[in-house]
Length: 163
Image (cartoon, rainbow, N blue to C red; front, side):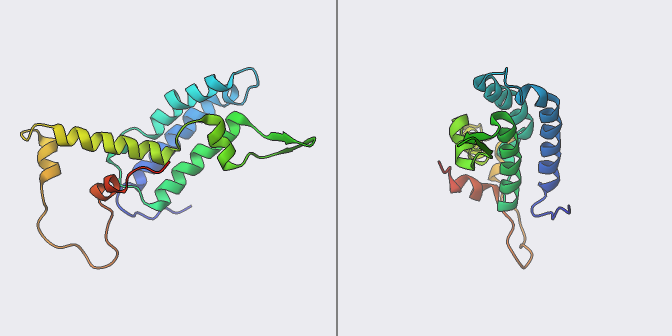
């Protein structure tokens, strides 16, 4: 699979997904076990896998491609956690909405958006002498290249969260 660099974070997201995948496969025996309770599985996902996946995610500018990749990984973990559903003596895969209802958690994209808004609020309250605040307030000189405009972090904050 080839990765198209959209805004410079594609490699970072790929690294995070691979790290979370390694964590997931290390815990797979426990996550797919019928002896482990549903609440324990959700807690293991939130504390161990999602933390690896979303480390420093509040600074990312997510495109639709990135959002789709993160959502696919999350659904893979949930399908392993909750397994198939039995209907009329046959087994079938759970639908996406059933996975999120069983988990009772916001999806990974909304989780990242909430963290991004919290980080923006933290930046706004920062002292003007701090380096991060100076970088945030800095307006670069020059013009952008022609073509499709690159994503900006501020635009991601303005989008808000969808529930």
